[in-house]
Image 1 (cartoon, helix red, strand yellow):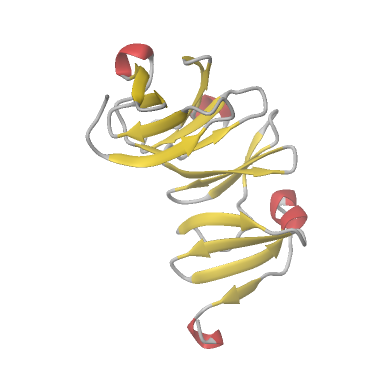
Image 2 (cartoon, rainbow, N blue to C red):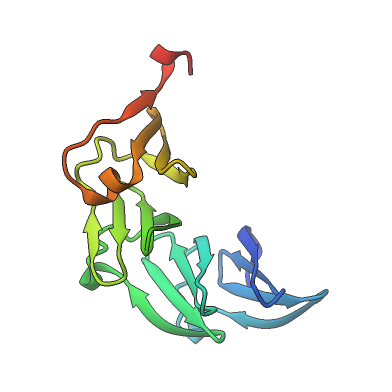
Length: 172
């Protein structure tokens, strides 16, 4: 295996387990590690914080300081960073949304429609942890201030909109 501290694991559509550590990736089939990836394979040595598998088997990997890596067929195929519009390289969560992804970073939210990455600067708060999208079209954004609830289309539209904040004043 690669690494000693594991922060994220997921089952891939292939049935393999992908375990992300502080040093790279471990592909596990049954009870055997079948492939490891680390900085010699083009992955950063930064801690991996989140992963999402796309329908074609590509895995998007959010890191603690080096942006997002796309891995397909157990090879790094691209990096998403500052040049692509992701100005914050600590990526806490990658959340599938509409035809793209919401990226929760260390100090902002971004929306990637797979063509353009847009910082969601209309969102009123920067210290966010995760985004949950419900079936009613609402985004529930957990943060250090509480939980923000906003219409998903309004959020990714990045214009003026209304939100609800569940915090101590609401008994949270």
